[in-house]
Length: 357
Image (cartoon, rainbow, N blue to C red; front, side, top):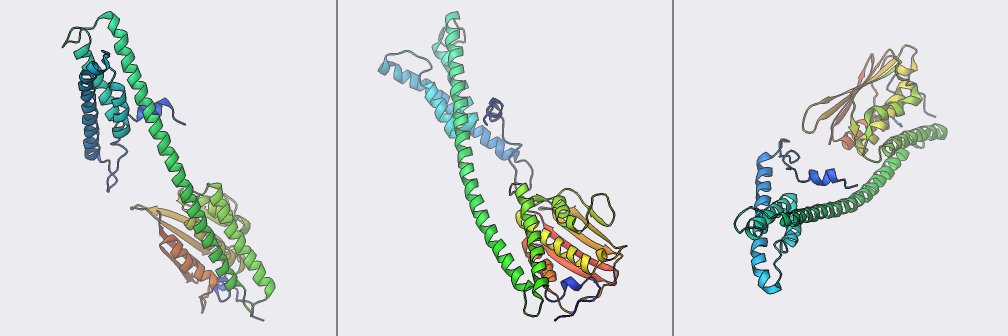
């Protein structure tokens, strides 16, 4: 039977352990403010060139509608100024977007007014022709808006299908990683030289931490989880109460991705279990502070610190156990950063740094 580890904070880390009209009208506005260059600044030049090209495309289509009117009158025998305009508005909007459709409509209506309505080559309009001009403009505008609505519906349907594929791949990836992690935990928790009851309790506690991490992710609909919520949920069974000074959580609002949330949840559980058994939380005057901050960058870096004080004297372990490996190796890999444990005499200290993607 193995001996009980000494009363120090390293024991647990030792061996064995809808489409509103406002939206549609908004699509007529330039996209320069939304277009971002490599440096994160709006790419005004690129947006201006693109908008100008779409305007020219639409204006050309509007001019083509005037030429088609001359060609179609002898064929159809119908002198309708706006007959070729509506199909070209539809085609311009589908190929060039809102700017091209608006330019085509404007050039086509103004050109037909100037060339075919009232006295030739003038903007003088007879009263009975005003209704036809306004009606043609409104009909073209309705076609443009309906075309934009159709394009957006198709875009949303495509995005929804792609999102479902991403969710399916993410679910498969997460399940594979979870099963691998459970396998590693079971392999390192159960050993021939360890009492079965102790191993079962520790295995169940680690699975609960894993379950709580996934519960926090599900509460955020798979889009990650708030670091403060994850820390509070993991530390609550160990005595964390907001506002009390024995277990303190401090830091700005940070949203973690699924892998980072799971890794940090497991690390906090390991550190808390160690603190209750051998560290600061095993002494009446002991205190644990979990704090983090963000360092500006592209992407920003999260720096989290676990700091214990007021507990028993800390003795560095002669051999790193599974809890230590889980934090320093597995967590670092999950976060794409670094994780270090410092066994200072006055209290264990863990430092975690990771880039937030």
